[in-house]
Length: 624
Image 1 (tube, one colour):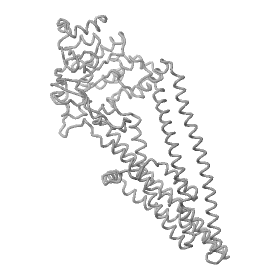
Image 2 (tube, rainbow, N blue to C red):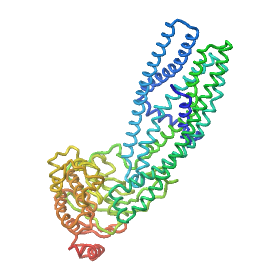
Image 3 (tube, rainbow, N blue to C red):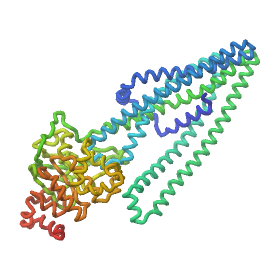
Image 4 (tube, one colour):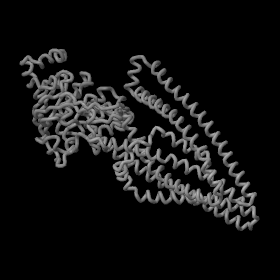
């Protein structure tokens, strides 16, 4: 049974969403249409859910009436059979109410969790279609929040708010009708007493909201600090620069503030709840006193007084809930809006309606007068995901100016040049991490914008400078490109990457978890593992973006043999500063500020005495 202080407590908790304003323009036809799209598959469950909610509201009103009848029967000294039957009816209704509550909760969970699944899957799948520029700008925590907090907030629109409005409205109407039938004066008095519960609850709720929002912000800051400092890279940085004391002081300050807020919150809650207990007792005393006066005067019977007192406890819950329903509805729709905001982001890269697969077998790669500039922020991101007021709408500067070259099957094309010359940009355009502004990138004679993304992924394999590894097993990381790979193929790739000996020494072999970003391995071992992953994928086109940068001379020599084997009969695009890789290339392109300034073999470029010869003398002479 819900007490009056519990009802006021619920109102206070709801009012903690006081930062949501009712004047926000969320009640639009488009919002409701899109919400309906997600709710559509759950229509049958929602209908049953609403029926159960109404049934529960009816049963909640029936019990106080029967309790009043029992008191009346006892006072009038009726037969025990009547009292027994009334008690039996109360028990039956109690059982029915309990069963209805459990089934209603089950239906609520099925609707809410089903909706959560649909929303999360939609957001997750959509985010995966976003370009790399989106991820380079977006705060990961803010994006994860959309998948968690906002999705759950949207879910409550159906699991809590919808059922609450329906059941509370039914229960409120039934309770008022029944109470008015018993005694209209006490009914009016009960409604007049509502502000005693509602206003303090909302006031304290707003105070608690401010405290809890501050605590949430501080907890978020502590979480960010722990996340950044407790990973291998962050912990290393803190130790290298001798900052543990400063980090501890900063963390202690935030944690101390959270402690202070916790103490103030506990005190506020205690004062509030004890005040409500006092007010609840006074309200019931007033009802019993005035009701008793009516009973002694013969205008009411004792059972009606008891029934009114019990109904009073069932009145404030619906009243306070409905008073806060607009805030609940707005909060839910705002959560939907924040989810829709992500879903409305148009992916810059998508398959054309008539996209075709890249032909099987060896393929050529061609860059035809390629011009490219990185997209502006307003095209790939959201201000709320970057924690800025307004996104920058200015376009990026052009970083490639009419780059053209062709790589035949089996050829190795090397890209060299100063940092920022555009080498990695060219490498990212081939697997279509970005789209060109003009010109074309072709694979197998087809523009990459006209082929399916799935076939392009199978065609182009890439090893980046900081090849990423998941916090997972060696087997899972290697099989990411080909989930159906056999153990024999895995061991063969490890052998060719000169890593099989190491994996044999690991505690669980292929099933050894290598830690966050592979930090349980050395830099060279991590890079060789990413190369082994490429060898397993066996793509016709290979892109190596500084793939040997983390290797020492011994490891580089070993891995270079594996890379040479992997590049046989495959079109290869290699970005490297290492002499061994560059000298093995069929053609070397020298880039400066987005232009190809020289092209030729290693010997030809040295003889020309241009920019490549300058780079060679400064970077490669010592290695030779």
